[in-house]
Length: 274
Image 1 (tube, rainbow, N blue to C red):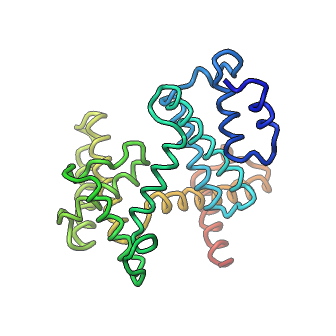
Image 2 (image 1 turned 60 degrees about the horizontal axis):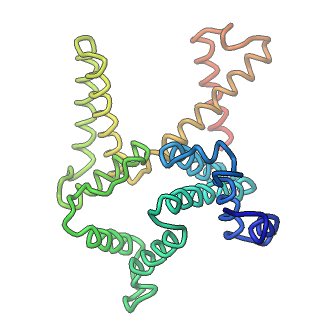
Image 3 (image 1 turned 90 degrees about the vertical axis):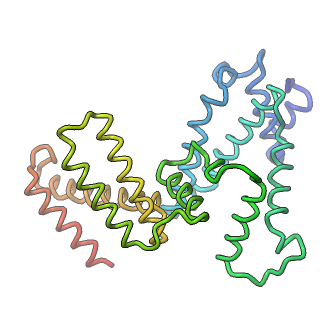
């Protein structure tokens, strides 16, 4: 595939850009001289890595770790190159088709930039126009078609609900959503002793789905909110461990009452530092 000629020179060229990266990918997948692990991969086995790299980009942004973001974006770009190479090998499409497709899409979906529509719109109006154009592209497809299965579950729930809301299937205010949350939670608690494990999981899923609906009504990204809650829990539990270590103890040597008191201390410490 790549050989040791021009391809080899390109691989060592620090200014080779995307063509260099594509040549590296071709060499890795070379059935004769490539990497056995890379050769063995397919779309299904690489997809989890793609999701992982996307989350690591989001994580670097959330932590404002700008020094890490460059590398994480590179990892994510490599995933695109990887999938495009496998598609090319299978005769499905190539990297240039991917680039052409996204370029055409961006031009078509921004008539206020690349066409003759007015740019005098709010961000909200532009979002509505974007969704209108997407709906026109889908044509006669069903309302919920095209919401990617691979999205994080909470994000997908919000997208499904937004689609349904556009055709009027939505609660009019947060009051109805909160009431439904209370109803679902009460049903789950009351019925947990007589339900099977699968039924409990189903009921809990219903509760999470309504929680995602509340997030949508409040204008909150549930994934970002939960990441924030995870970070807060990690940070505060870390303080508990610090204080226990200073006392010559570990969490396993403590009890709930002591750790709960230290949790409240960590909470108060954070609030005082704001």
